[in-house]
Image (tube, rainbow, N blue to C red; front, top):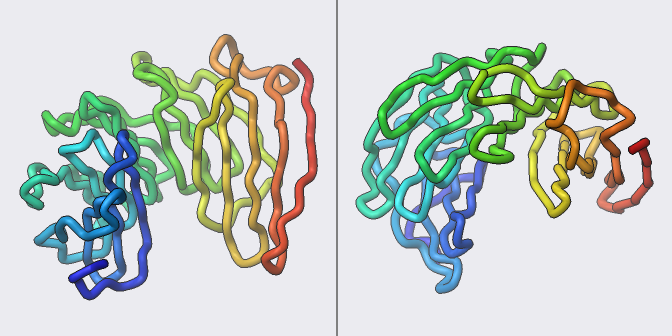
Length: 239
């Protein structure tokens, strides 16, 4: 139960342990929840703009991407901001590593690689041609991003260069894109808008071995939604 008057939820993040959840709301609120006890722990203080994206560094630190283009690092125990990182564009997506490094995808079409604890911009990853909607760490050395240009890019974070690009289907993305990971490894790409809702599953076990050859990465399935009824269609690739 929340003791805070909350607006519509715009963003959500789950802590590494699964015990904590952060929710971001359109009335400038970010709230920390205890999942096991199903209760609000605290509301973060000091927001003047809406939160657009959220992530956990660990159980003690959270990250918020704001509607003014900045990204804040928050002490979850005190509910206060430790540091603000300014990128200058709308941060639609943020991902965090346990060492405090961040990937931030925004409306500049680029991905920003930060050391959040030191406040240092490590690099700006360029390659997308439209707004970056979701980012994630595949490992400590590899990042992943997906954008409205319909491309899924794997990044070598040490060299700050693309490792591989996958062209997803359909060709146009107008809604909210999300990334997830499964065993294999497998990458899940989700999209939601008024006309086109789907989830695609990709086997990317060899996605970072060499430059892109589409037949060597398989699209395992695509789920689409229409009027609330879900259907499934299998697509297979080579390799």
